[in-house]
Image 1: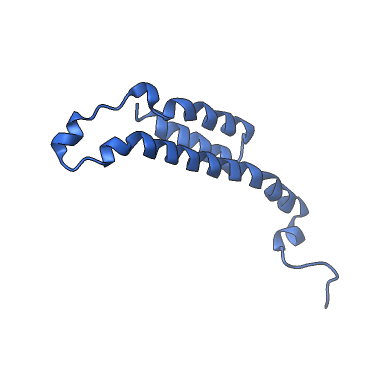
Image 2: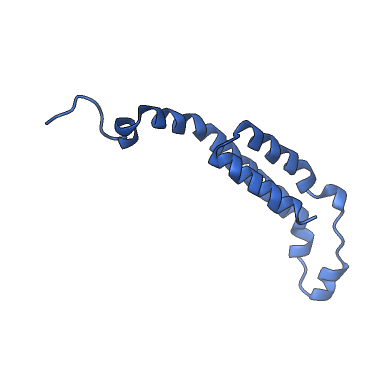
Length: 105
């Protein structure tokens, strides 16, 4: 038996709305990935003086400025993304990112 439609997406055959919901959430998931990537780049720059040390004595002499900690700028952005994606896996991931970053203070 042949079908006239495409069978490349089984989700559409089983649930046409599942495919639409997935497509709608992709931009939000992409935003979470982009925000996470941006945070990790900023954190790498912030922590660079620590990573450049060669001895534990050097490491202990480095004092990073807490006012420049990127978590202060990024936690509200993760929270806003979680609010926009409320009830989705992306929201849960963004909430988890907020929790992980905020508990380090």
